[in-house]
Amino acid sequence: MAKDCIKTTPSRTTRHHHPKDQDQDQDQDQCEDGGKTVVFDAQLLRYQSSIPQQFIWPDHEKPSADAPELHVPLIDLGDFLSGNPVAAMEASRLVGEACQKHGFFLVVNHGVDKTLIAHALKYMDSFFELPLSDKQKAQRNIGESCGYASSFTGRFSSKLPWKETLSFSYTAEDNSSKHIEQYFHSRMGEDFAKFGRVYQDYCEAMSTLSLGIMELLGMSLGVSRAHFKDYFKENDSIMRLNYYPPCQKPELTLGTGPHCDPTSLTILHQDQVGGLQVYVDNEWCTISPNFDAFVVNIGDTFMIELSRSFVGWAAV
Image 1 (cartoon, helix red, strand yellow):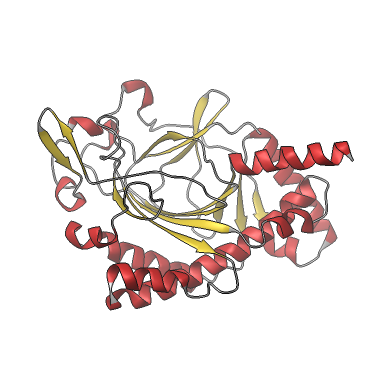
Image 2: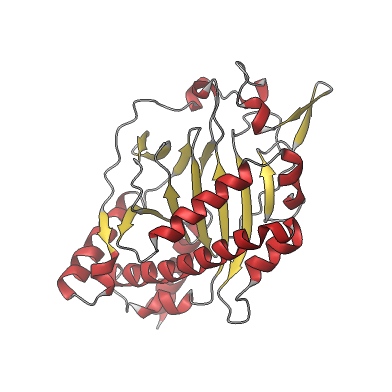
């Protein structure tokens, strides 16, 4: 796999689903710089003609407005899951080639209801439009991987990302059917009951989708379709809502800095603003938004598990 890093430019919104995610990002809302406290309040900063120095990135790391388009295959998951052998062979071939080059592909006819996606977008926007004090009811605490975080001001004092996030966990275990609903009820109150139900349904749909993708990956690697699906069947995941507020100086900052995904699998839905870039063959390339598709990225954890599996088979 040749995928190296990912970055995004503000402003846009995305939803990430990370099976087997062990990301332990720790965020707070302010940092000290020369005695001055910097607070990332998107409702205020979005209108300022200049941005705080802590959010300005070095020239060599700033986004490229004319990055070339990355060729990523468009996989019809519906044809693959229908049992059509010709479609299955073609899909597995395309995914295998993509994983060898950069680890990214798109899936359409994925089975996730369009109305559910629209509701997820709606409730995400409603959360990030709240006053900062209300969003902080779900504040992520140090040492936790779930909750609300505004930028990374509690961790760093420079090269801060221009974003807010809301993260929450999902488990596919049978006794956790209302885990997300209960989480938002306890953190945000009764007014977020509908929010919790929508994202409970959305996470369940993402879990089903991820297992279908695991079938496809199994076939592309020459093992049984059920091999990775069975392994990840009771997955623990992180759902992350990323919000990149409008910025008056977007050429100076990044929504998310260069990084590698530590997950097994990342499933990303983009809005129509765009900004996702992938580092391939020593240059940043763009993946343009496709509202009907999900972007799939093979993560580091899956690659480790894959190596262990094949070592085991070789020993046998």
